[in-house]
Image 1 (cartoon, rainbow, N blue to C red):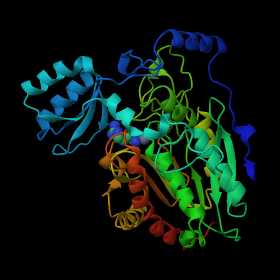
Image 2: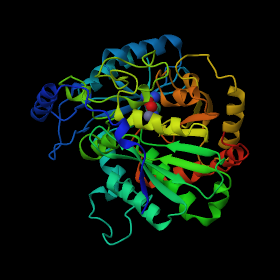
Image 3: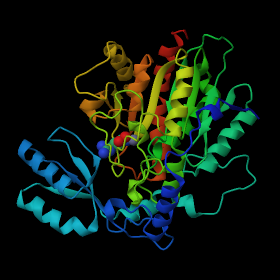
Image 4: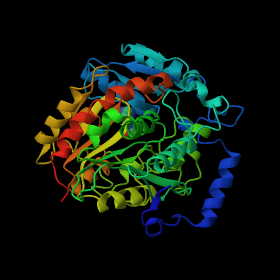
Length: 444
Ligand code: ARG
Ligand code: ZN
C-alpha cells in the first residue's frame, strides 16, 4: 500500500482558541441544541437536528420592485437562500422554517408575489434521500464498501481510496496532505500512467461544503472511472490527475451524524452558539481575503475565518497545490447546486483574468458534451454571487491556466441518491475535453 505523507507535520496548526474558551463552548453546546438552523432548537430523538416542517419555496419576482421587496423579507427573517439569481424572471429558492411560514405567506400575498412550495417537508426529503444509510453494512468482507447508488460515510470513501492504492500501486498513490481540525486525514489521490516529469495535470476537488453531498460522490466516481475503467485509459495519456474528494471531512461527517445542512468546518470560533461554529473554507483563501461576499461574523454561513488560511484544511490544500502549480494546468472545484460552470474572478463584478476568453471557450466545449443536464457557463459573479477569498480565485492567482468551479445538478442540497449516477455519468463526459486540452500542454 502506498500512503505517502506530504509534509503533514509542517502545516498542521494548533487550535486557534484558548483551551478554556473551547471547553466552555463545548460544554455549553451539549446542554443547548446541536447546531440548530437559524436559532431553531429542535432535535430528533437521536439528537440530530430536525427539519420537520421546514419548507423550500421557489419564488420568481418578475419585477425589480418585487425583487427588492422579496430581498427585504428574506433579510428580515434571516432566511437562507438555496438558490439566488439577479435575473428577475428566474426563480430563487428559500428555506422557510415552520414558525415563519404563515407570516411570510401573508406578506407575499399582500405584495402579489407568487410562490411555489418545492419541498413541503424538508425532514421527509432528508429521510428519503439516502435509503441505505441506516441499513446494515452490505458486505463487511468486500474489499471496499463504495458504490454510487448511495451516499457514503467518510470511512467508506477513504477505505475505497486505500483499496485503490493497494490494488493499483503503479497507477494510484494516496497522498496524505495534512489533517482536518478534528484530526481526520486529508487525502489527495494521484492517478498517473506516465513516466515523464513534464506531464501536465488536472486537479479535481469535492466536499468543500459539507452538505453538498453530490460533490464527493462525483469526485470519487471520477477516480473510479479513471482507475478502474479500461476504456478511459486515453484520459491518462500525457495527463496526471490529482483528486481530493473530501476537502472538509469534519463537516462531511457532521452532516451525516448531526445536521444534514451543515456547510462550514467544525472549528471553534469563540462563540458559544452552535451555528456560530466553523469557517467557510471557500472564503478562507489568501487572495482578496475578507472582501465583499464574505463575512467576519462567525455565525454567518460565509464566515471568512480569523485570517487567510487560518484553517488546517485550506492551509494543507493550498500548500499542496502550490507545490504542484507548475504541473496543474486545469482546476475543477465541485459544489452544488445550480448547473453552472463558473470562471474567475469571483471577488469583484466585471473583472476578468486576461485569458478569460480561452477559459470560456474550453468550458463551453466541455459543456457541449453534457446530454442530460444543461449547465450555464460564465463568470462567477454574473452566474451566482460575489465571493471574496474563494479557492478558484486563489488558484487562478497562482497561475493555473484553466480554473473552474462547478455547481452540479439538480436543485438544492438534498438530492436523492438515485441521482448520483445520472449526474456523474453526464459530468464525466466533459473529462474528454479537459484532458485533451491539458495533454497538449507541458508542465513547466
Ligand atoms: N455551493 C454553493 C456555495 O458555495 C451554493 C450554491 C447554491 N446556493 C446558493 N445560496 N446560491 O455557496
Ligand atoms: Zn458550495
